[in-house]
Image (cartoon, rainbow, N blue to C red; front, side, top):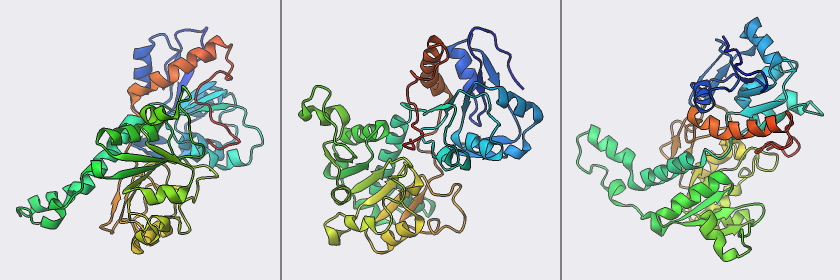
Length: 368
């Protein structure tokens, strides 16, 4: 069940994850890293979907987890584990998330009921930008060029059977992409869009300045042509709107309650296609369906949802103006884990096992 540590002077790293190959990647990058790999039938998963039953954990697994000082795991796993038994990670000092989003922990009863969290959490940051940018650009091109219609025509052996769909499209260079949330991932999406000549508008809380205080260089550095703190202006600007917003107290429901009406042609918008690769709770299903029905937006391409897996009775499944994707735009690759984890591990060791110098720390008060 576990690999015994090979070096006693460095703290052991416990890996309890549904993502295959993490331990092998860490061993390849640092053959002397003390590792404890926990495998238990109670935990499995695929892609961005985790299946975990903490009540089914073996006694040996429970013991190992209770002794873990450093843990690599999914936020949903840690949340479910602590909701089941608040003392399940009683020795933990630092948890390295395998995902960029950590909202399952903030939605857990353990975190919401705790005045002090005795351990630190670090996000899996710096790796998801390129794959999510690829996914977004691919989806925009797919939508504009009607690849789905072409595939249906082929099955029916119909040459340009969907003539209107496959012959009427716009150049990416003629369109504007609005990005809600311009952190690492948002900026990667912006730079990818710029490579195709798109204009980019970024919605942020604070408009950034250039590293050399020359605001003219901001677009070149970030890929974002224009920044705005005005949500209405951002929604009205885009032919496509992509949300990369995390789940925080200030973003949950941000686009609900008719917010997308600002994107309608009636209100001066472009009736855009809405893409969500951030978190599903930025808008509830009822409000998004209403925005589609009332033509505030012309379509939705969704990789994240309030409830995952998406229930079979969801109204999204049967709509031709909605693309449902099973949270796969940016999956954690085992080969990326050493890049994120090992530099922080070195900081932890060099600072006498202090978490104060770790990068990508989550702020328990802010919720991200």
